[in-house]
Every structure is written in structure tokens, then in C-alpha cells.
Length: 241
View 1 (cartoon, one colour):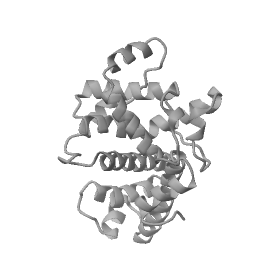
View 2 (cartoon, one colour):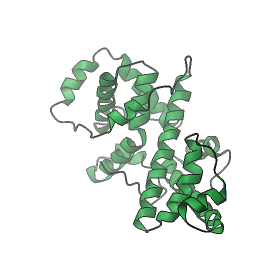
View 3 (tube, one colour):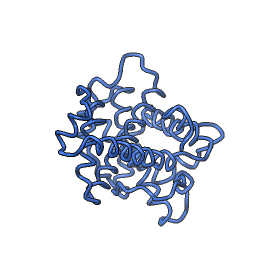
View 4 (cartoon, one colour):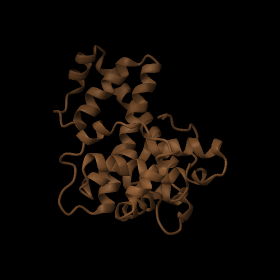
């Protein structure tokens, strides 16, 4: 399963229903990369399922998506794509025949290679009692979008030999996300071994590029311009640059 997203800003939602495997398969890869972890965590947190059952149902969900049993009913006029996916997921959980469905897909549908162990470790303490299901799913989706964008940024910087720039960004911005005390620019400069002025430049460039990577991911998994703008308003409180 590739983690690479398309270079264009076009949505892959329409491509998921294509009759052409060459069009449908890349779109399916983006769907899985964007949503497998939010789906797994939602099953654990909203439905209180044990790890093994949540893992099985995550695989079931994407097997159904690949076979277009779920996606054929999507209507962008009625709901956002992520809301549609969550409702389909809820239906899957309440389907008393899901055990038989797993047997049915066992002969042909692929089993996705996903880091469920890592996702399981992230579940503890994420949800609070009484969390709204849609808010929980949305929060985990946002987390997955930014996690993927940060990973892509790190890979880009490594490929370009910008290790110092990445370490500046990680030391200042990522450590703060992890509840580490905020360092000063001088502290970061001393740690990485660059002038303080470069800290400012590296941070500005990394933040700009990270925003672009986030926008690409949101664009890829929204059904159209209106939904794309709505998601961005919730993410950034405004419109994309």
C-alpha cells in the first residue's frame, strides 16, 4: 500500500466508483491511507470493540469499499464524504451478519497491510465519555491528515538533504504538539547547529509546505469544492491560500 498522494489537487472520490481498475485502484489506496486509522480508532472508541474485532471490521469496511457495495450510494448533496463513510461504518457494526461477510471476502478480497498494533497503542485516553460520534470520527480524521502530511514533509526533506531544516521544524513545532516545553529560537539553533536567523527561515518554509501537503490530502478525500472549503474552514478557520 503506497502512502504517496497524487500531485494534483483533484478529488479521488469520484474515481472510487470507476469501472476502470487503473482509475479505481489508486483512488482506493488514497482512501485507505486517509481513513484506515480513524476507522479503526472509531471502532475501538465509539463501539468499544476489542483490538482484534476492530481490526477485522476495518478490513471488512475496505473490502466492501473495494467491491463498491458502499460507495455506489454516496450522494454529495446529502452529506460530506467522511460523514457518509462513518454512517456506513456504523451500519457495518450493527450488521448481525458481519461474521459471515468476513468469510465471504476471505476468498478474493485483499487483506491490507496496516500497522494496527501502532494504532492500538494510540487509542488509550483519546475519547471521553459521551463524545459525539461524528466529532470523534472527525477529530481522528484530522489527526490522520496532519500525521500523513508531517510524514510526507519529513520524507521530502530527507530526499532533498534538508536534515537541518527538518530538525528545526521538529524541535520547535512537533515537540510542542507532544507537550514538550516550548524552546526558544536560540535553544533550537544551538541544538541543531544553525544561526538563529535560519531557524526563522526554516520554520516559515516548513509550515508553508506542510499547509500545502495538508490541503492536498483534504482535497483528495472530499467530493467537491464546497465540501473541500467546508473542511478547510473547520481546519484553519478560513479559506486555503
